[in-house]
Image (tube, rainbow, N blue to C red; front, side):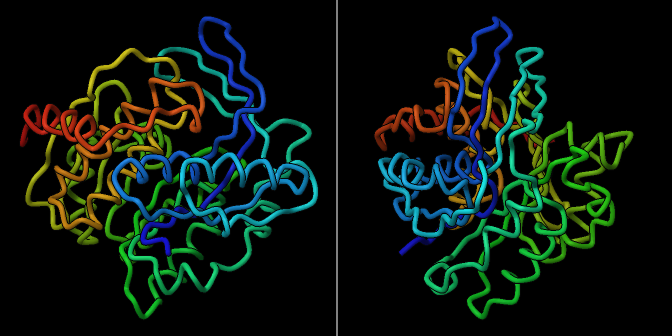
Length: 307
């Protein structure tokens, strides 16, 4: 049974890197990358998502090779969500739905209700980027479970997900950790100072709040706003940054499930992201041994600064 479940989109990505390298039909999406990030730390991980019917068997088979439970992946007619991932610099990229893609709404409706097996066994759920109304509905549904699971959330600010629904941050009252990127924070809330903004939300909603800063690491404020930490990246040869932020979220949730402090959770997320960026595509990520993983964690922990 899956103790950690990621909820969100699976995608088929055509990735174009800055060196004009092109990789078509890469299985991706926030639900998958965050599951990979969690799986690096936790043996029991599942995905609740949806894909195009013609791709279902292959996607279940390929993801299953990572020993991730795929029984929560449903199918819809059409191609599922197909994206162009356009890297404009080492850290800046756009994701654009292809003309042949299913819509965000079709994806969110086709995912259907959370399977009962996940409701009963899930100790932690990561709500990966999806349509904003679906994000809020998932928060409400998961926070009402009698098991009171840990809930973490990430968001998108792209127009096709109707990001206006995120402007009112009251939804944070139902989550333990909010894990957006600085890009999403600046687009949606445009704070003058991200560090102060993190502390304000952490105090107001009593939840952990992190800002993922790409190659500058992350800032994370513990619930209540008592402390803010600057967490560096773990430097590795970078092949593709697609999904790094999602992998961070999966590692972060694995830390929360394990009862770690907030800066340890952020360090675990950083380590997960370091493995993802070494590969092109989520399923090409190398599975580290526990010793390799823990060695990277020790390095990151040694470099964290309390601000």
